[in-house]
Length: 148
Image (cartoon, rainbow, N blue to C red; front, side, top):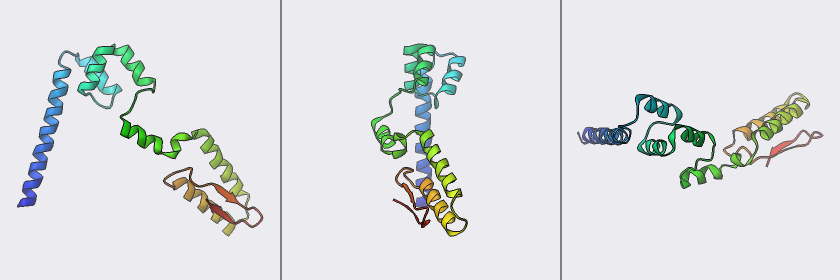
């Protein structure tokens, strides 16, 4: 019975929070046209009172320019998490070229264990949480590969 009551409370709380959010957006956007509301919803991740306020202050043209310029600032905790990702500090095209070059090098190795070991190292490297933590070191004479 207690579990059912907790689920009901949680559902009511979520409904109340959604209703408050909807009413806040409704109040903030009450003088926007249906076209403006549809457009805002399309070019953002959903209409919020903050979005409506920015749209009103800047107008459609400047709002869109700001959305597209890529200079929008994220909240500090999110920006810090993104900056902590090693992959954000490397050029994607360079990473793809490095992987393609490594695949070509692996294809030149003798078939069997040497090639399979090198492929495993490459796959482990590409699926690692931090894509750039491993470096490829393979000796073509001994066909011994490692990631380090």
